[in-house]
Length: 217
Image (cartoon, rainbow, N blue to C red; front, side):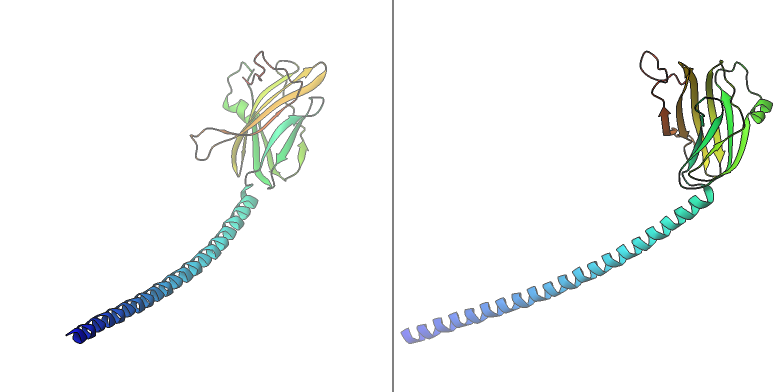
């Protein structure tokens, strides 16, 4: 009986060892399969990401090219504004941006004028400029009237193929020297939103109010 008991225990332990070995082998095979699947997924994800990045790069290149082409056709984000010569006698049109402006027109409104503008006065106050190349300035023969004498207080409304913008041009003589304050605003697209200021240029000696700001109105 003792020998039979020993043989039975040996058989039990042997079966258990074989079972454990089979379980270990099965788990090893399962882990290997999972690793293979994970590697294939990672490889697929990497290939997809590379393909996506390449597609996005091509798309970005196309978008950039289209934007450049559109800018060349419409004028892009370029704009222009008026300043005066050093003696304050003649207006100078200054281009800002890298694209040519097309079909440029400017309408002048004197905010100090007591007269209500009519269609006739608006037409007469509109200056046709046409095409305006980048990195350039034009000295115009047109005159901006002083009102009151020695001061310019004009709001200028521009239109071109690339949209609309406006300028506040203020100028006056201070101790015999011509000084200016200029702001330019881009009209929002679509309309209804707040204007965006795209330029401000104020001479150091331009007079300010008690609050230290410019009287634009």
